Image (cartoon, rainbow, N blue to C red; front, side, top):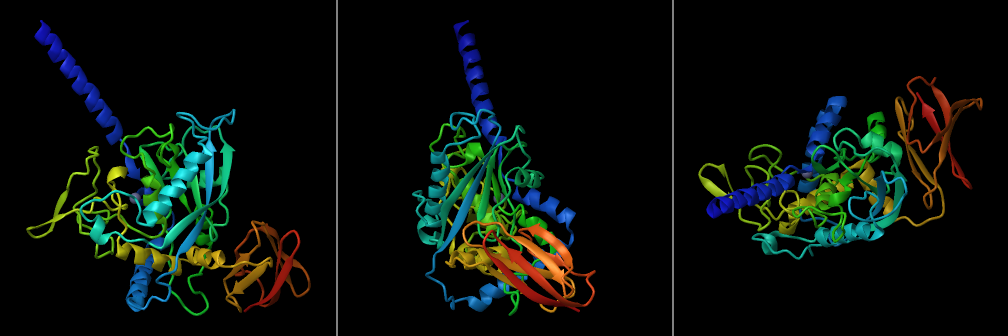
Length: 425
Ligand SMILES: [Zn+2]
């Protein structure tokens, strides 16, 4: 009898333990690939652009190898965190509260700077030989808190909705991070950058109407229970050190999962070993995982890489090729390149640049407003008639239906106005 009770107790313990494991293993670190599939479905031409983007990155890396002019330069990315919570009384902090504390938010910025600076503290099999400082840092600019009754959001389809609730700050100036509760089973998601080929006029800056729409949702979305570290809002024992955000920001800077999202796929980085698949595990002991991708050769997976799915505690590596790829994206992706450029500007003047000029189809405007000011755009023809009235923060203009001739593009903030001429032909 006693024996039977012990057996039952043991069975019960095993069940509890299995459930605990199952609970943790039900989650998936990242929905970026799924989100990207939906984006590609909506906009099939993006698939072509994506292939050309990859070619542009490879060309850039080949041309620049060994000749980087900005090798030692550190890029600091300004970050805006949008906390979208359903806590009607606006109380901040505490278990199971999406209205997370400033301390939790700052802890995530600290994690980003440690991880991108090669200071994660964990030493894995490959860490000493292949981990590098990426030369990328992060600075918290603002926290925007918004109450919304919605209890949870989809990481795959709700980026628009989140951006509607808490609009992105200019996505060519800031990394926007929305922190909320996600449904399904995902911890976070990211919008991949669009990369364009460089030419003299449009160095990294081509903009289309699809791009304009994408610009509104450009950023990452993280479930608040996996954002930062050392907070009672964080309950996972696997994804508890803020590395979901490190991973998603990696996607935002153009990195791909180290298994290439298919069996033995490529991430276009030679210094990450090819892997059969993701390291999705509930084992936090960081045990070795092996792959067999080329004939009989067995290789050890780089489970320490931030672009794998390993438990947070096992992660410590961005490689040099990943670093180079991120810097290529910072140079080639329209909004990322602009962000780097703007981060170096200090002026009180409103700056406006429009192109191409003359224009046949889409006129693009780069507008820099000092501080965080919004701006309005109006367009006039030669007779002084308004062709477009007071659009807020507009960055493109479709001129296909404009008669040929001379036009004026007027940008205003509260205190300044800049007007530029352009020709439609
Ligand atoms: Zn991912």
